[in-house]
Image (tube, rainbow, N blue to C red; front, side, top):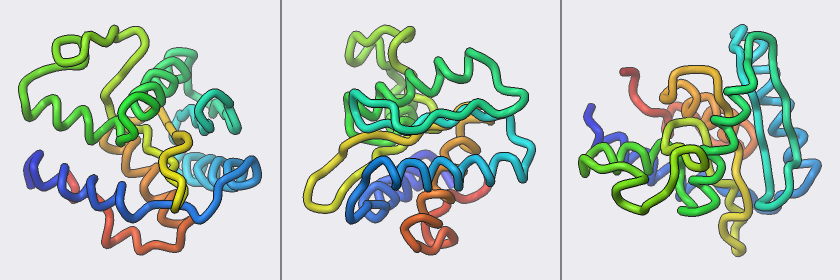
Length: 165
């Protein structure tokens, strides 16, 4: 599968993975799910869940570095700015042979269009925040978030997953 097919799947993920409501307890539950998934895989992740303007869950697992926290923040900034998956935007920019700085004038110290951050969307409200992980290759970061969201929202991950590279 190519970039166009991945973009179509990501658009479907963004359409389907929506919460009926989202609060501090929802963030804690999602964060703990991601933490358990990462620990079971010995993944050296940082997990960052935020409502825009407010950090709700943060966890740095063994093997992660301060740089992972910065990557998660920069990916979350992409979701806050564009209300889209950071991986989806990154693939779209790649497909158009451009970058955040060239297309939008955004500095790379504040924004990262790489896989791992996904919009937290509330039905009837819209995008209210983001969930981000950093520590794995970008496609794996993205897929870990999608798998956790599917678990929280009772969606079939097999229907929404990206194909293996």
